[in-house]
Image (cartoon, rainbow, N blue to C red):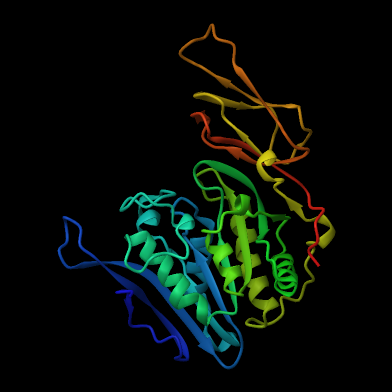
Length: 335
């Protein structure tokens, strides 16, 4: 049973801004709590949309966007309910890290969580057990974080149910990002979006640049996209502009072949810019051993045709790091 508590009443109309308190007793605080920011705006009848950011603490466009919406939206502007989790992995957000400094876990590999587990597992359990069951749609805002720079895109999480799959595609296209990409994380079931789909929620993901910075362009895309999705569900008035994103332009990461991994430690030199068209068998980059200048750099190769979708940031790598990600045209059934 969860020990998490909040003073927010999810059924009350108006705007509430507060926290979910999860009891936490580290060395520095015998009877303290980890406080996860939570806000709810409710008015009239309509669907419940869950907006989440800060799943990884080094991804900034989503938390900025949701913080602005919490401050700017008046209840009278909406029809329905918006639940905001703008910094859901607060320990990681405060540390600017992908993983939590408390228990070392990646929140996005702990769903559906454990209410009796570590802090990270308790956070994912609260989202899975308390928040998702009262939602109709779930939007999880990501970027490439400090280890990747990714072309700004809206993400389709695959769904086995044809109707839910159709609704996911429609909602992601409504976000209207420059790219739309199908990403299943190689079938990983422990992500928040995979869990959301299993719960039957219409699900939207994003990847908004990264490289450990705030991208001006990606932040603009994120701001517009979240409002577009809220308008798509009727929670905000219509945006007044038809999305430019098209079903026929959807891309996907083609499984294991879409990832170029470092084969040794060193510094990765990419040979193509983001967005460049590449082919399987073509050289993707080289790994340099700077402490042994007489050693020939190791060349890495693409295993799939497509475009350079994501690229390693920073340059230093160890064996197994993702250096480049390729996205190719999606050929499957998304009807």
